Image (cartoon, rainbow, N blue to C red; front, side, top):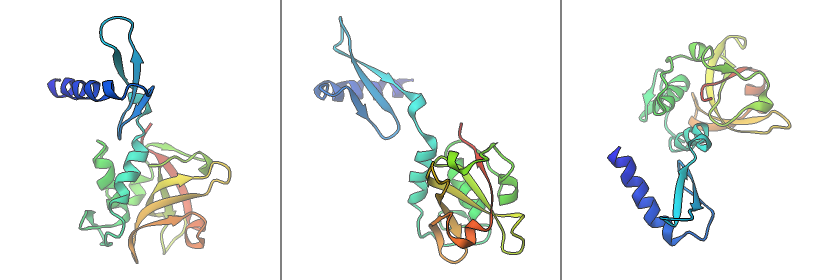
Length: 182
């Protein structure tokens, strides 16, 4: 609680000088600065509901672009696809299973790809059988009109990369999407 109060004191001090602006953006918070009639000149109102965990997860995932692939890899030294999702979601308090098929049963299904959001998990058929989940990706962004999306994942050939749902390999193997964050 003291740490939380200390953060607010620092923010109040910093924002007093920059109070001409109605809203100040911070990495994890939107802070609204409102004038107060009596007492202190400004009031900080944390807007926790505006924090987008999916976007923060994607930002974190980008730090691992180029990380090598290793079967059953679950650390920043090397990832497999499910291990990459497991590692990232763990930082947000979620415990995912270590294989794609089990991850595809978690959360809430996103049946229409036009409704995908950053951080949603997308699943694809494996090399042997396109109809059985064998690969996990994390949505980076999506087009609400066309339903196409980009996703970050650990690929066997190139390690952690960003791919497009329109690439033939993924377009033909797409199975489902799941939302873990609310």
